[in-house]
Length: 194
Image (cartoon, rainbow, N blue to C red; front, side, top):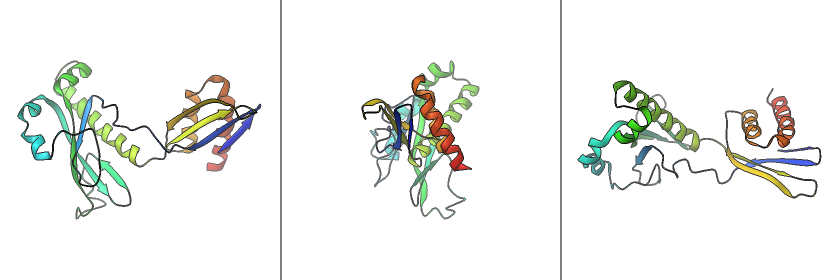
């Protein structure tokens, strides 16, 4: 998509190098075991058996969830089995775990109560959902040029449920002086989506 106004040009493109969702680690740890895919965080365990055998680690875990994957015309991830779409389990199964350690949980939730455990569990589910979205979403970037083609601004890693939503998020992140470009793009996209 390309939009021009007041001597400026806004370019919207597919982001070929979206941010790696798991690259900066985070408060939760996702460990996966798959013979063909490198998924989740850096995994020091050869197998899930090794993971579950580490008694010291097991004692430090506050909340844990299984990570399920469906490998059929792409990868999908969930905190629950894919029995509705793969009842026989030919293309799906447990490929790992995501957990939060007690020290991180106490820092985030303030205590290790049952209420905090429920919040942690909900956050683990949300993180698996985000990982699924990361693997199944098109990411976009933008760059803005002046009339001579000189770059003025650029940013990437944007996604949303619709292109209009993507453009709105981009606009909100861009400098105010560039908002008219995004507003024009949003109007054009909204018309196209009707």
